[in-house]
Length: 299
Image (cartoon, rainbow, N blue to C red; front, side):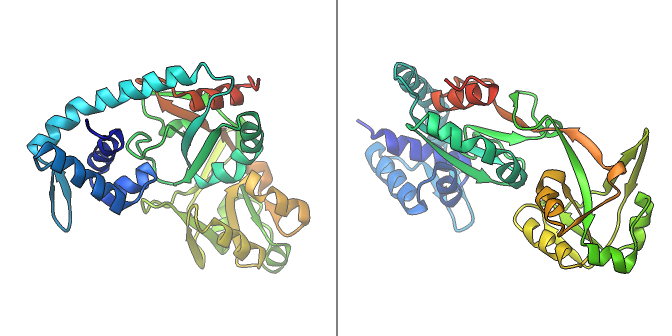
């Protein structure tokens, strides 16, 4: 008899293409996965992976096992989840892959109440600005904006349905350099910009009375969107320049007076995010509970 955890370890390593990435996706350790795969290879009497210092690639035997094992383990998971449905309250783990903005602006209004309603569920949130395959990353669902959803995903609205891109600066900066009256004025100002992990740095887009204006301002500071966003906010408060960010992220600083809105009549609205998950598999009980909760079914 094979240990089910060893089989899961093999699938995790094969799906992620390595022991470290497999550990990151499964929540285990690279050494633990390596030992599990070694045990499995000893029991089966065949090598399942060709290992080099740069890659971990399934052998022909490994590929054959993976092809049959993946659906079988999914069936085991589904069977266990059916049993979970007989509980008074769903239990188990729920892993979400979300952008930093969602972790900051969307989930704080949802997570505490959800966990209080479902004490048997353990929630893990992975904040990541890269668009990933949630299954390959070992997650049950993700949060993203509509234009980045894949076609085979089911999407459920989560959080505010309308958000705005805001620009702001410290009052001291604006007193020194003047207050822009049109988006094109930003080209004469110091601006704090953000760059995605992909390397892209998108222009700032504004809209008023049907007129859309895109500008690509420059400035003394560029930060990685997500992990270094707070640095950009702190720099703007200190007077480094004009920052562009989610209105919800900047709102507390407007209320305190640390930042002053810039070009507010031109701020562009965009649809709020979605919780998305694969439509081709059974929805685990913890994820179903989360979906029902954000839809308003909090019983």
